[in-house]
Every structure is written in structure tokens, then in C-alpha cells.
Length: 311
Image 1 (spheres, one colour):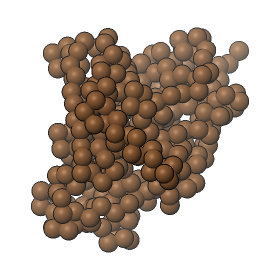
Image 2 (cartoon, helix red, strand yellow):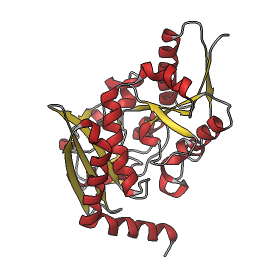
Image 3 (cartoon, rainbow, N blue to C red):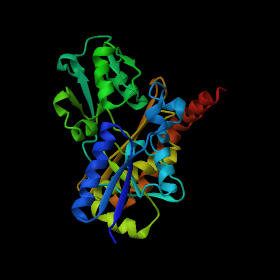
Image 4 (cartoon, rainbow, N blue to C red):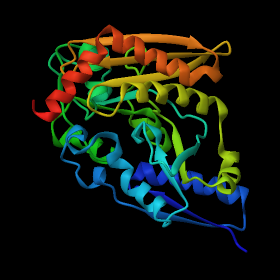
């Protein structure tokens, strides 16, 4: 019997590029398989003029795709891991993370200007709370302009909305072959990445046979790093209600996990770091979150939730 792989994806250029890459890898591994992309429109794709906080946070880019998985309309889903909520539906699992692409953020600016030489009061577009507070910390006199939409739409808004620049994820620009448009790769020391940034995640209904057949895509170092980052997010109860960043990297066989939680206005930013063995990533993530919560993060979260409730 001919194998069949139905792959669920969003319809943006980046999502399609990622799904097509996965499809290509499956075709190489299983030359006789039928591989089909199923494009699914998510709430996040439809409501591009509303902030993620107001329409439900991270899950707005995956819920409809997960529904298709649960209903058996697709066999696997390809996600950007930074869009995947900390808690998954009971019957679903992320089973594979291929090697991570560049985790950094990038600046795309008029006349190729760098962050350090932006004019005073420069208008920088981003829809990310995480990026907003870190860029304002680095350059306090910037005006941050809310920005959503697919990558090409956001890039066009530099001219359309008279912006000095926008901040995007490096991974998307690399995967689409648009690196020539990048004015500056922002060091992680200046702008700590989002949890899972630069990582593709493959999600399935729990199925040992399919898990085994897709295991060839696994990159264990990426898996261990993302496990640490997502444990940090999970312990915070994380979504998009607050600016949150979490990034794990390696040095001499150890994982270094750095995390950040900020207030909505960026006036308070709490940072912490954990170092440990790769297999201890989830425990490290939990400890890192607990340190931040104890140092004022819990108060920030409670204040943010009160604001959402209108109390």
C-alpha cells in the first residue's frame, strides 16, 4: 500500500516554505509516498488588524490546524515553535524538531541604517511585546508602532506607514531567501529571542508508527534546547499576555538558558539564567521561571491578567 502524508500548514509564504521543506525531506526518505500539503486558515491569519493579546495569544496560529489533526483531516502539522502554546491538547504531541535556524531578530530599515545610528524618535514597527520592550530599553527615544501581518506585508509597511524600520525573526528571512533585505542581525545579548524562535515543530495525533517514521527529521540538540525553553514558558503560564523571552544555547556540553519577563510598559524587566546538563533542560526551565516569579514576575503576571479581565 502506498504511504500517504497529509501535512497541515498555514498559507503564509513562510509557513508554506517550512511545510514544503518538510514535505521534501519526507519525499527523499520515502520516495514512493504520496505527500500533500493542506492549507488551513487560522484565526491569527484572518484577524491581522488586531493584537495577538486581544484575540487569544499564541494559539491563534495553531488551533484550526490542531482541530484538523484531531478530526483526522491531516496526518501531521508543521508549525513555527514560537507560535505553539505551552500546553497542547491531550491527544496531540510535538514529536520532532529539525535543526534550528538562526534564532536572532533582524532589523530591516530605510537606507540600511543600523540600530545604533537610527535617528532620535525613529518609528520602528513590531507586533511583539517582547521586541517592543527590549528595543525601547536599548533606544529609549524610539516610537514603537504596532505591526502585524505576513512578512512581505510587514516589509511593505516601511514605505506605506512611513516607518524607519521593522523588526522580524531572522529565521523567516533566511528560509524565504530574503537575507539581502536585512539591515542588521540583532545580537541575542541586545534582544533575547522568543521561546522556540527559529525552530520548526512537527505535531501529530499520538501514533507510535508515525512518530517512528518521522524520527529521521529529529535534531536532538534543538529538541533539548526547546524542551528547556518551553518548560520555562509553561511554568510562567506563558502566552502573549506579557513580554516573555527564553533562549537556550550550548557551551562546552552544557545548556545555558536565559529568560526574561517584562511589564507591559517595559519599565520593569526581570532577567535570569540557568546552566545545566542537556538532559536536565525541563528542570532548568522550571527553576528559571520560579526565580523570575520570585523576583517580581508573579506580580507582573497578576497585573497583566487583571488588565485582561478589566478589573
